[in-house]
Length: 381
Image 1 (cartoon, rainbow, N blue to C red):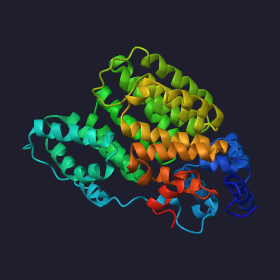
Image 2 (cartoon, helix red, strand yellow):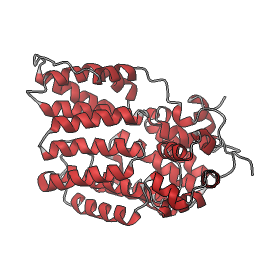
Image 3 (tube, one colour):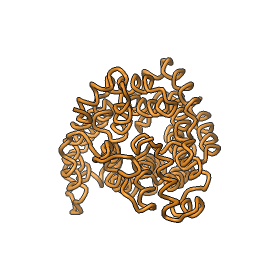
Image 4 (cartoon, rainbow, N blue to C red):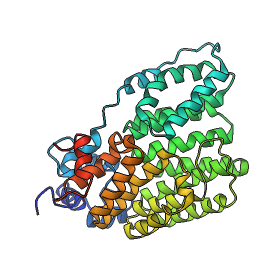
């Protein structure tokens, strides 16, 4: 078996032994359970999230490339050519006071347009909009803080998509600060906090943040409450507590059963969101067979087609991971190509998707459509 063919879990185990660490010592330094380490090293639990690979590599004092078996920059660092992130960073770095001279109604229209653009997965366009949008929303802060919370949430969401999770966490934290004591507004901000922390591989912190926010929201907004429970479930699955993840998802399902169609906080929460979350929880827990079974049922439902394009495409990337875990390269390729057809930016610009694509592109022969897609995004020549 070559270095490239060797499973990543085996590389982790080899480097752990080389660093003279027991599984318990290694788990303690990672802030995870010994069971998580054991399952990861045996390949029972997938290690396919690049932020977690970076964390593991840091504890082992090796370059992430060593664990990936790569001799070039990993696919997850090669984000598509989206200009404008530096301008967003500069907008977030502004601490000067903005006079409240901006028209609230016009800023509200800008925020609504940015949300719509994001939900259609036009990420390059969102990035271009953000610096001006943040300035406008900061200008109406005293008059309408909800607009600023929404602007920060959009900013956090797109930055996390593009692999800028640290900057996304900053935007989410700003949203929390602006929301203040309003439990529902703070709950919507906490959804973004949870997403950013999970993208950073800080699942335990994400679980704490989202469950605390869910308690505060209570019955004030079932959609926000349910969305926080789903984020908490994904975080619990991310650090190996499948039982808690299942219980949280079940609680969310109870809320979804009576949810109204109205979605003023743009959560997309409902029975379809719960069904998708169950698939992703199974993926994160290493139960790929369960994930694929549920996935093939979910996509047949009418409610699936009513979810935002961004939501569906992001989910399909996770579904592709499930097929990949099973060793079904054809199924993984089909789902990933479907995601690209639905929202090209989700696959071509999102590091997590590019990691899956690169793994599929290494197969001989690559699944139908994958080789062409890998060439389009610059992973192969």
